[in-house]
Length: 508
Image 1 (tube, rainbow, N blue to C red):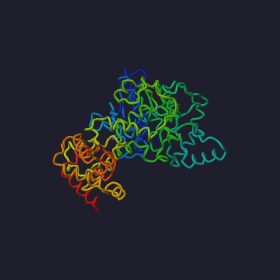
Image 2: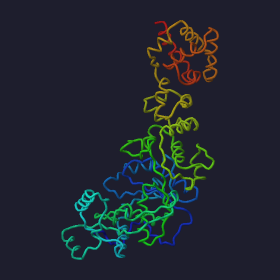
Image 3: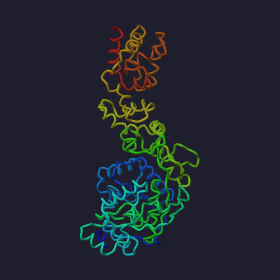
Image 4: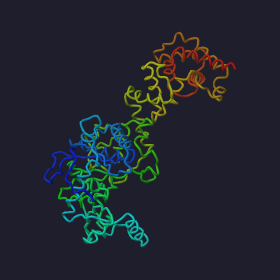
């Protein structure tokens, strides 16, 4: 039986009274560590963060870890790392290395039981002795009869004799909250407007504490939000029926309601809800981090999916959004998560963020590809990244794009050998460049390009007849970054070696 002790962990504050209203908004993101950080959860966190910034409020992180079977510490780490990577820092909660000690629902089991016992004493909740097998049989009967699955409230008015019999049989009760029927629960939603839910659609009296003493989500979240003086609950619209249940619990406990706002859900371009089952790892924030997406791009994209900038801008920073965001500009319609659109944002940020930052973020992908970055100076590594970033959508593409810089000799496909390197013109171009290497302005990429042009002019060759043999000799392909930059970065020794190898192919 759930404990009736009034013990509460040291970090947990006393339950607020209805008169205690914070002067500024207090919002929270409260993920369950039962999986990796979902892009939908990240967007919900983002909207809470932006609302707090706009109204000079407090953004709180807490873990709702009462699902003891599926909660994992690795998921906790992933959620924390993902939010920090996106730049969504919190003011209270799981501040690793910071002033805030870990906050977890599992530390408040006695506290939840104390509150549930108050509801039992007030006649608003009761002990339910129904077994798992009995509840499963009830569901089967209802489905067979074509009825909605719901609890039939059979334990609401158990006699003392029946309770004693169940206790004697060793049954351990859960606690159920009495759902008033008929009743319509209504509220003004900060995004959706007026919402009304019939309590007949809530599934009957609901469990608030399981037989093992662990509080159920809809109960624990109310107690937590009251304890933490949450003023605004901003979350996905899949919680609308949960909100109706929670409003009943708020009323039963005698607490003022927070303001509720339910953001539209995220769907794919085929209008199917984003889910791990259907879409796999692409629904997780870590998927994008590992592929070299810019957190600035993801934040920008997630913000504008359902929120409209007052000036209609598409590109803006987290800081700018935090100055302008408000709930009245959030769409009521479902949001579409379009990876192609996200890629457009990501390409923009790869091209526009400081090259030093892009280089720093690229280095893990150099290591992953097995490149020896010590073969070049730090300045040249930055120049290498600068030469290819215009063509990148994500940083994981940088390995193939810069591989020729690190290969001892580039691999030249047989087709290019035949079409580009055979013939007298290719031999003339490569020989001419080889003979002029000692005169090239190696630190000046524009000067290196002009030197190639000058060689072409002297032997009356131009266009692809001039440039392609040099490109193929130096990179193994006939397209890619600026040719002058390639020559300048490779340097005289590498260019000489590659030209000599290519000349050998020309004479073959």
